[in-house]
Image 1 (cartoon, each protein chain N blue to C red):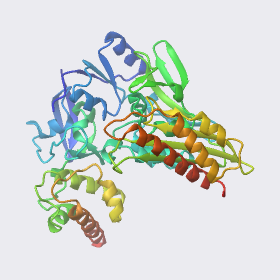
Image 2: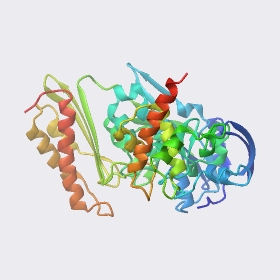
Image 3: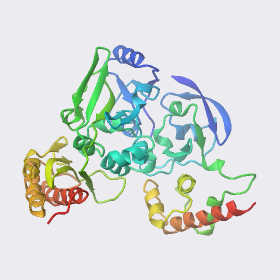
Image 4: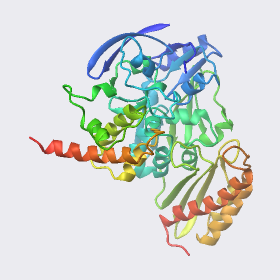
Length: 292
Length: 162
């Protein structure tokens, strides 16, 4: 399979990158890890005459963690670096777990977190945990920069708020409060090289034995990742129990809008959301409290 | 568009003229380098036949542009034998009968090297997990896993030798 002809550029600075985009409006694409873009170019799903590699932009490779500020994750951070980072495994464990479930080791050694986000697939592995950790993204362009909650970044499958010429520079995560449990469940037929049929991410913070705040994030059951405010409300401020988890799981299943496709029917996905949300909540809670 | 790139392949320096849209796999197998041990299977990153090590890490060379590999160190299957003697992993694949048609073997062996470089005594489960991105359509994987276990033993004995 031969790649179509294109001009490869490798800007050394963001300014240079903006200039190349400006000169090639509508024809240029940014190249991060290439595990999506090069496949799509080969399959002729997309067509770009100019490829702008982000590899040499040091600003996009920054990884910084502090107990005060939390985490800044450069968009060009490789998935394998997330999977293997001791800091991420300790501080943001479900992000590291989700990273370890993406593609194969060969894919993870190239694919980047920024690419996973910008591909905007409703099943993207890192997206659920990032939304659960309340990530924000920093978008830079020649006109300046803006910061947006990741939750509001997606408009539909493959569609985001990113404007022509804008680059996703980094992702920021706040610190995670003590007594927080979290779980990421990816459900598919295979254990590897799989696109989630449904994914459920939950994050529960406890104080005085009751659940103070809850985040329930569902993947592959709507045009974008969604949270279930109904499920979150039912959990917040209550003593956690199996019954409450079951109730929240029912509400989560009620708020998704899955489609039927080659991987599963909409009914099956809805059923999965209920089962997996309950399972995920029990797993998250068991990291912090004993419950009945 | 063509570009000059400098690559170190199997510890040998190459200066190559490559097209912007050429993949690393194509350039490795092409007339300038002519190392055809790297196989091209699916060419979309699913099968792992084209696995090579880039700075010691396994990547699908069908999804790396040759221009992106510039300045990096590449190890292909041709780079494992030393002084005409096969690498212990290669020996282990022969002994375990882990090669049938052989098409997936170069990728499998390089993936095995990457695994054993970081984990000298992997469990069978760890081996299975490491190979999720390498497809074999002949052997059913059983003998390949045996070969990696055998290679792990052979390598650990080799280290004990003075």
